[in-house]
Image (cartoon, rainbow, N blue to C red; front, side, top):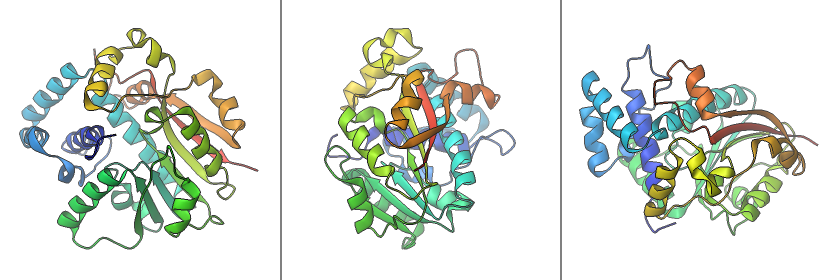
Length: 290
């Protein structure tokens, strides 16, 4: 990771901002805060997208430049929004692991009664807080920020220092992070999540392990892998979907749901000729059980 805020986090903000410009009848979610994180030409693209024809042009350019990326970002946001909304009806704590420019603490109605803990790389977290302060003024005390390096710091210890209650259930969201970590770091985080109260939920994304070694087998993967290398944010970890159940079970978690972002995109009725999301990018829900 470089000493700046994550560029991939900013691209996700752009995808969410573009989706939010769609008419209410055909958008999959609304993120009114996403635009505040955009800089440089990405902010200019959003201005163009304020008009319907401009939005179609911008989406076309993005989809041609990075096939599948926008659809994957929108699909994963939609799926996690829905799962988190349901979970937070009864769960009092929300934990964003590698929060990026995620604004669910502010835009999901079900999150308003929860205490939210946002954990991320210091540079991305500071950039996010600065943008939110500028747009919203003083931030609510119900959202607590903490810096973390998942490769070398204890998740539970960082959370406890921020005021997390291990005796109360929590909804953990780990979106767009596991693929940047080592196998040891992912294992350590999962084993610490299992220490949360029984009934806690983990919503996370992961990539099909084969894309790391044979990206040519997957739509859009080769171009994406080259781009991530150029950002200094290469992918390093993946899992095989057929092994996920046993992998989680060995770490004290029960797999509840598993799907590809392509399936979510198609299920939302937004599939197109070449726009279908990454088949190798996946979404999963697990539950802490004793």
